[in-house]
Image (cartoon, rainbow, N blue to C red; front, side, top):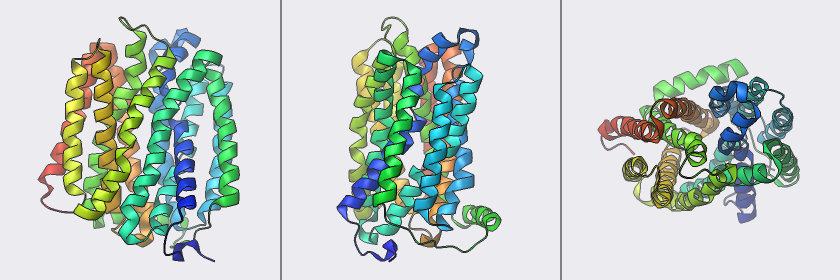
Length: 391
């Protein structure tokens, strides 16, 4: 029996999807609080530790292109389980990496294979009734966002107690549990396309040109996530410097602060269902801009960092939910491919932001990072605001 014909999404299934999305996407972010630990483990390559999160996000963008469209072509549960297995192998390689360059290669593979959550999101949109789609996607996004943010907390705490290699070893165990839950409880999907794999990939080019709204949402999301990644990639370096002098556990604990921003996800989805997403995206961009201005004056202020993190995470997540709510309505039979385009740009922006943030830190410190984040937010505004009154 096809699950896509289900008139309403059972709450237990929604919670499973949200939890699996969060635990899966966490793999991409475990390395961010660990940069100072990598620098200490590999002192000869200390200047290149920023390549670890950058390559993870580049890998994620590439993986989005080559694997996520398959959700329209083959049964998703089997695809997800194969990706879970390969992800476990990649994280095991990171755990035993003898050099920074091996760690970089493993991090690229973690990103390439880490798109499990991007199979879950379009499946959620497929299962949910149209009138509840925004709220359902928002709920799963809450799980995903909590995974992103709390990954930093868990990573920092584990690294402080048992070292950074244990972080990746524990992640392997978590993914084994995720795979078991998916195998036993996740409903099966029904493919919506019979296109061959090359044609499936090629069709994304046509979707990109067919829908101006998809282009706008993708570029806006990429710019916002670039600023977000510039901040989170360099936060551990700021906290390890005077006057803080804190270790990876402190950087990870800031994920708990950012988790407050994830609470806006269901609210943003519900607002998109009722009022349309465009106004919410405009407000979210403004909130992000305010956060970077606050960061610029908070290099030595714990309170300023905390308030800024709440604003930044709330703004970025509200914008993403609203953007995904509107693109999922463009062409239901191509949701995986449409989501692939959006997230591919999103994480390409994240990779650019990580690289730009690390470079700005080396040249101009925290003020440079804050200006990079503000600059990317202004790019998002320039792309979004002139688009008239489209949904």
